[in-house]
Length: 431
Image (cartoon, rainbow, N blue to C red; front, side, top):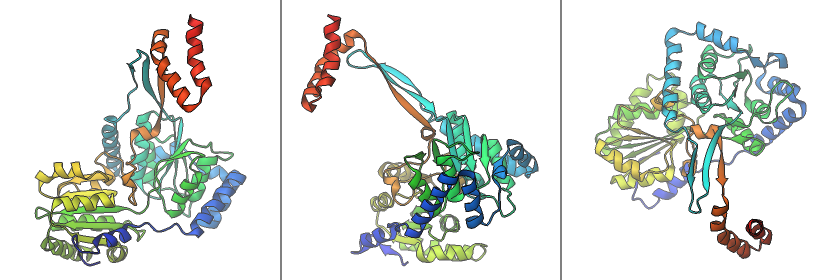
């Protein structure tokens, strides 16, 4: 796509069309429904049949489970540097989310009653881990462990030989996964939601997946909780004259290489000269990348570039897109005002040294982030998503007297006489 001008007559129409999410094909909806029904009705046998027909993997139910011993052995087999990288990521993610750990509290309200909140970890959760995505294990399991979840259950696809990579197995062990299964896809979401003879259902499922997995999550919502319904990855970069064209190009290319072909990358530049430099850097760096075919597909159909005149226009574009990841490759003096004015981004990387890949792997925030403009009303995965809360209310007789008139007034307005009587009768009995 050519570089557009923010003030062009058709700009917003083109941006809207580019950001529009495609309808889920009926074939995917039907496939998810069919396989979920198979798992719900036939349990382990349904999972095994679906694995054989969809993934071409012959796996009897007794081989579904991955033992903790298998996870631990993978840590020993893993290259020392790789094992340390996982440990570093677990430490960073845990430390980041400690700051957001909800705290129970109590206080007195206007009537003198004791009110408050208490937070409880969910008892059993499911983590969907796309094949080989070691970082997703960390970005979900570390939060569950910190929240105090007792049963952390991972599902991940195995290869044709029934094996899961050592990286994923080691990450499960080091991140606190307590139970794991070597199958994924719609079958995993069904097993998590409905349970089977050998697998207990979970209360909530987390993690990204392909279109079939996301549709399956949508269909089981209500039976269990789900975190997000994420689509293909996104990155929006705001670049001014302070931006290093090579840095910007490398991050746009990194986001484009995920492999679905449906990734979206956005360049919001404050000058045409900077845009030209970034495009030139993209062409040069692309030559040496092994996944260039997948990247070219995204550059052709999933690259949106606009030139704006000022930071206010840049912020307007970013707020509309609500990108999964956003980079501020700008004068550092602009970080604070832009962060204040851009309110819909999932993660905001600030400055040329803050590559998006840091957020993907090790910076600390979970990389499970909203996509497809859902950042307007959703946030990224956080520690409270692994918890539930109860409100606490304790009234004394004197506090009840102070609240009675308000309760009775609402009861009259809403025609709920028994509500009003439930308070007045207490006061009458008290004399």
